[in-house]
Amino acid sequence: MTENLANKKEGTTVCPECGSTTILFDPTRGEHVCASCGLVLSEHAVDTGPEWRAFTHEELEKRSRTGAPTSYRFADKGLSTTISWSDRDAHGRKLSPSRRAQIYRLRRWNIRTTVRRSLADGLIELSRIASQMGIPNDVSETAALLYRRAVEKRLTRGHPVSAMAAAAVYLACRIHRIPRPLDEVVAQAKSDRKDVSKCVRVLIRRLSQDFPRPTAINFIPRFAAELGLSTKTQRRAIEIMKKAQETGITAGKDPSGLAAATIYIASILEGERRTQRQIAEVAHVTEVTVRNRYKELCKKLGIKIKV
DNA sequence: CTTTAGACGAAGTATTA
DNA sequence: TAATAATTCGTCTAAAG
Image 1 (cartoon, rainbow, N blue to C red):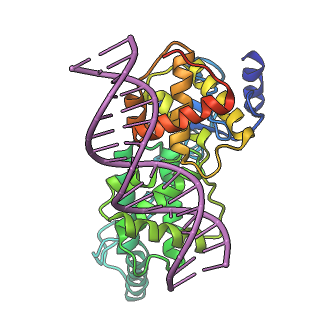
Image 2: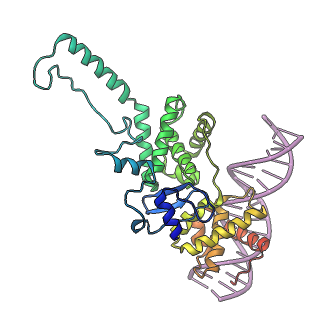
């Protein structure tokens, strides 16, 4: 842990578990999470390291600027300026005719660029979905950026605004390696699953960008946190998952179910038992799936559990 | 009464021809 | 595009604690 902190001050945080250098910060929990293996690095980030260390774009902006931070979530990036329709200047004097013509053109451009309904509506809807899901700010920023690019490329035409916004949120979570099941996003969206997944496909195809597929390990930290499990148990679950992946029994299986199963095993092994029911609930799978996966894991990995 | 185990067909998904 | 295989889900029954 000490060398970890030293690294942090150098500005090169490395995950001690897997060596990955991509560390994400979850502002709502105050935790740094490894993007690759899901290990929570510093629960006590508050009293380690310098205050000003910025892990995300948004933090950086908050600390290095005066005034409100800019945000992709607002149609004008939060830098709104309006031009009044009065034909007098700041001192109340009448404007010259040429000046009036100039201001008139400015007004038109101002309106043309800021009042783009589809963009504005989409970003509002997007923020609503993200906040209802309790998604970290930097993730919803990513979602907003995706949505902007979709609008620029005219990909939103023919698709419900709500569905496209939900798709952006879903993909942003994947980019940040804190995947949420599509159904969880759909639950907050005002569109049905069909429309949302159609939008997801459009974005994946037309936005030339890599959208990493969720790995079972990516689900473990969130499930463990929601179940109130210790980081020790969480690490144990990740250990088991790695072994499972090496033996190749994870192919084609639902990552959520796999994560749920390893957590179930780890919680028993570490004396923090949770019922299949509890785990199935946070993982959004059924108890049946938890059972099948954990039975298979125990058999293939030679893990014995006392019932 | 709660938790777990196991079995069945139904339903949605990925792969293949 | 259609057929095939593998997977998960919902429900039911039963046993164990």
